[in-house]
Amino acid sequence: MARRSLAAVVLAAGRGERMRSSMPKVLHEIAGRTMIAHVLDTLGELAPQRAVCITGPGMDRVAAGAVPAETAVQAEPLGTAHAVLAARDALAGFDGTVLVLFADTPLLRASTMQALADSLADGAAVAVLGMRPSGANQYGRVVQDVGGKPQAIVEWRDAGPDVRALPVCNSGIMAVDGRCLFSLLERVGNDNAKGEYYLTDIVALARADGMGTALVEAAEEEALGINSRAELAGAEAAMQRRLRERAFAAGVTMPMPETVYLSYDTRFGRDVTVGPNTVFLTGVTVEEGAEIRAFCHLKGAIVRSGARVGPYARLRPGADVGPGAGVGNFVEVKNAVLEAGSKANHLAYIGDAHVGADANIGAGTITCNYDGFRKHRTEIGAGAFIGSNTALVAPVTVGPGAVVGAGSTVSRNVEADALVVERAQQTERKGWAARLRMRRNRQSSGD
Ligand code: UD1
Ligand code: MG
Image (tube, rainbow, N blue to C red; front, top):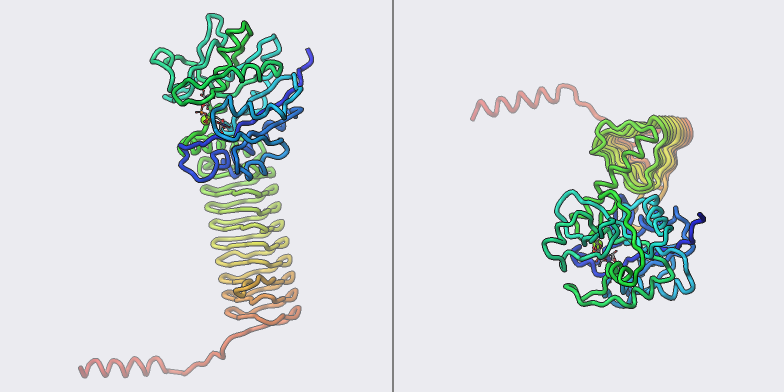
């Protein structure tokens, strides 16, 4: 049977008071991306004919993140049924299946969304995505008939002990026949504990009209709805487990995976090794065979094949560590390219710079890239050797093959293959220290 056309409504408005936040709930992040972006991205896999995101007034950032979905504004957060009604204009004339998704349920997989939509195929008007959580929770409960079909959904606050004891909980996600969605929603009232228009009421309304309902069950983890910071942390943990699985599948070795933090977009080649306690923020690519040792912090960086980073290194946006290059302990790299085979092995800051192939940056080297007003660039030629504790005062160029003596402050360009040393003359007085000691000893014995 041909699949019916699909539209989706993603609910992103509402107060989310339990987050105790000045930011809309659905803009809180999991693995470096907002909850709403996770949902829209997953939805994209289903390629719905229409997608409408319901935001609240002034939630411009939600709307901006919601592309390519259309947005409709729910003027007041009067409940989930009221929110779906805001999609009426955007869905005018649509008679396929409407998937109602919650932006606060970011772990739902595309295959589950599709299974729910497909469950309307045998004529049901409303399909509910249920779950069986292992622990105590305050989800709505699905009341089933003898055949297991949903008869009603009762919100936790409105349920008595018998209903609260029911095993199947409501994930909130539904698929509804577009031909009857809005007529059902119009009949939802707000006579309940919260005084809200509950989407969940359409199940009983459909049944009262003799329409069929269906239940699809999802794993608890996928259907996790986030209403508090603690639940946000729970979803983060689940997402991290998924991302680690993805990294393993890509061929990454991680001896202590539970200590590695990944972003939704972290990309790994084969045979990468990641040591314990490393943090990958957004925009990081680690190519084949590269090694990230323990305690590193990376964001917006690329580590090319066979490179070695850490332990205790920090790569900031624009860091590009070339093939076989090395960035060692307590080295910070920002907006800088380290070409193949170059090395900064200890205690350095390389910012707004280009380091040529096989150059060696000694311990304590600093690119002084900021003059208090603007940033300036440092250019280090291929094969150059920068002695320890060098300050490179940008803008400045050290030519290929040049050597900078340790302790220099280099503020003028250095020619290729030159030696530059910028230090005070070293003076030496023979026997001076011995004479001083003798004098001091005489003074103290005379005390
Ligand atoms: C909802 C369900 C509950 C289910 C739970 C699962 C209803 C009435 N209840 O409760 O049965 O167990 O999800 O997580 O549906 N929203 C709006 N406008 C509003 C209110 C909410 O857009 O006026 C959006 C929120 O941004 C959120 C989603 O709808 O993404 C769900 O709202 P929320 O307040 O979190 O509902 P729950 O109390 O979690
Ligand atoms: Mg919720």
